[in-house]
Amino acid sequence: MWRYAPLLPPADPLTLGEGGTPLVPSLRIGPRLGIDVAFKLEGANPTGSFKDRGAAVLVAVLRSAGAAAVADDSSGNAGAALAAYAARAGLRAVLFAPAHASGPKLAQIAALGAELVRVSGPRERATRAVEEACRTDPTLFYASHNTSPYFVAGLTTVAYEWIEDRGRAVPDHVVVPAGGGGLFLGIHQGFAAALRLGWIDRVPQVHIAQPAACAPLVRALHRGDNVPHEPYPGMTVAEGTRIPTPARGQQVVALLRAAGGNGVAVEEDAIHAAQRRLAREEGIHVEPTAALAVAALPALLDQGTIRPGQQVGVVLTASGLKAGG
Image (spheres, rainbow, N blue to C red):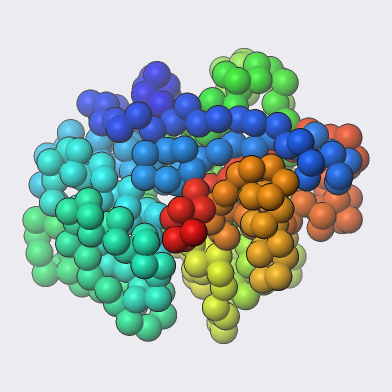
């Protein structure tokens, strides 16, 4: 990933071998839908999710700036990534996680040596807890994956790798799961930077998928709202996207509108079905959050966003082992 260092924030590279994940064609799901689908397998990253890319850049920048300790709030994947890269950098890490987060993710954070604080109640309480901890401990830096531009900068490398793998033939569309929307922003920024550099001739349309139980970005996009908020979020198997008030929500919705992106809210049974199809028809085991993007494809076709025969990139954000099975 650090071969793209000239396009990343200046810092001494910090790496566990992140990036360079496989880009594989769909053999059954895509053909059945009448579209040319390629899967980006982000579960192949060191801690099992795309968030290693963002954590590598964020922690590298903080280490270069002299930070000694970092903290974040996470449902699991970002916490595991931050814990791993903090350990690699020799930094103390404190992670605040919702108590309902999956056991394997919390176990991974603890195994990586981070101080794990489980917070009961809504997701927002974990955010308030880490903010208070950073106020009371001046040595603790809030390394928020939900607000840091350095984290998003690391995610631009997904787009750079796509171009390196496929040349100027970028897909017509890219579909990603969205909670806070950082991956959407990073991928779009990466393709936009490549366009400015003359590497590609156009930027693909990038679309998001959220669970219907908590879809503030999708609902704001379609209702014409500018400030995404889910007042009564339900529980969802796609726990990584259950963020009722995304910190970058206004930026995400504004870019979706400006760039012609779409958003789909996916029911729970469709998420489960997509996860099963990926495993049994493609041989790809992902966590439920990752399956969101596949579950959104039929709706994007039905709405005319994606047309038959088009090329579609789907980012499968994390391994199924992250969810314990």
